[in-house]
Image 1 (tube, rainbow, N blue to C red):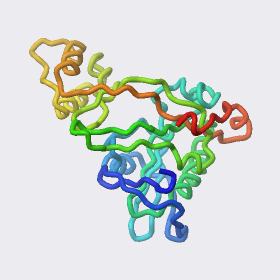
Image 2 (cartoon, rainbow, N blue to C red):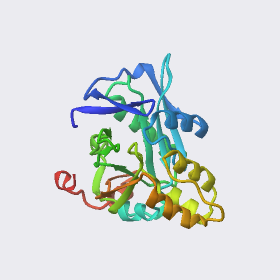
Image 3 (cartoon, rainbow, N blue to C red):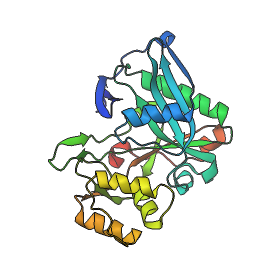
Image 4 (cartoon, helix red, strand yellow):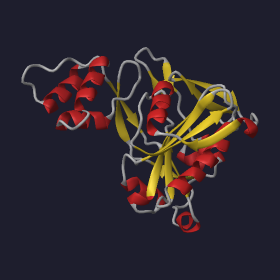
Length: 263
């Protein structure tokens, strides 16, 4: 996996050979509005989902328009900024999505990422660290076909990201097609929070049974996971990479872990 670079189109991944050169004269990088970034990410990224964004940066190619998006987002676990980067939660963001279309050359990744980080420092001066994760565990559908390969964060290493460990181990709930049932979605439904109705419809599309008349939200979630077509998959935790955005922030980072041992 170190000799190829992942690309996306229509939520399907493909790969470019590493070290393909980019012609920077054909590209531009600028902040893009959240609506445009959301459309691009939902259309092309395998998750078809969009995180709580703090800044969206787009890669544009002459004659083609938007061909890549980087989303710096609110970390799903705010304590991860302190754990992995040694900063207060408000001083860190997560590189929540990083998506390039399939025709873009391999070196477009680091070229774009460097300029996205510059935009972050310019637009969000309060941010001192970036955390990102790579998921090394492949996913398969119920027939055993691989729908998502495992990733070791090669681009993050190429961009001088510091591997500092893993996120917490957990158990994933998978739908028939290999998609992960979001724990946050389940929590919204259980607690009747904003977004619960959309989460309910998502689970129905995945094959969950319909709610019975008078059935409590939490009871329905338990029954849906028990009786629906869902599988459980132990996960050892994602690989965690961090960047400090100034000298003091870099000094506060935990020591680099052995890459081979962590992977």
